[in-house]
Length: 132
Image (cartoon, rainbow, N blue to C red; front, side):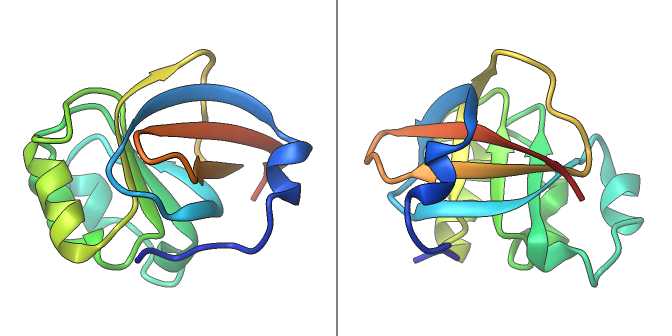
């Protein structure tokens, strides 16, 4: 399931910036942050960048991600639950997903992060320090 990176060494040099409910264990996933606020953001997304993106959204009902959901590495949602529309779609597409995420600090577009999804129920967002 999902698109994993190798090894836990990434998490050893990263700063935890948030946690949420993990949809399913998927290892550690590294990618670039991209916030999607509305359908226009999805339409404007560069297809070549999608395979490296971790899509961030603000609401669990954000089904407007559907056209690109199968193309992104993972999804992080700052609201919703594992029963939200977005979580159900992510589960069907086997896309790693963290719901109801509480961010301790701002996470910005282009920032490189690691999702530590090794725990069955808690997903941790780690900042690696880089910006793509």
